[in-house]
Amino acid sequence: MKRAVLFAVLAASLAVAAVWAQGERFVPGTKKTQAKGHSGLVYVSVYFTSMRMVSIIVTSHTESTPSANMVFNRMIPAMLDSQTYHVDTVAGATATSEALRLAVQQAMTQARRY
View (tube, one colour):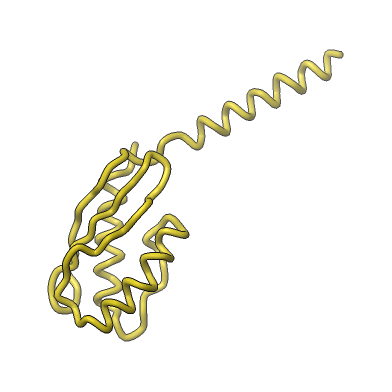
């Protein structure tokens, strides 16, 4: 009987600790940032809930359209899936890729709950 009660208390404690550890990661809302790409600034708007990055929208840029579209179409879904800006860059569009990564990194830093 004592073992069953001890096990129940331990299980409940672990469940509470797991929920607490997964607490709010971000201040909910939209963060707008920018970073320098190959041809100019890349402006992004990143929306966060308290637990995750929900959307990344490139609001403006002066990059070459074919290269920029390739970067944005590949990297944004990867960032949202992995919940990080640490994703592979697109070959041949390194400066645009790095601008997107930096802008999203800045947004995540601004939104992060410490």
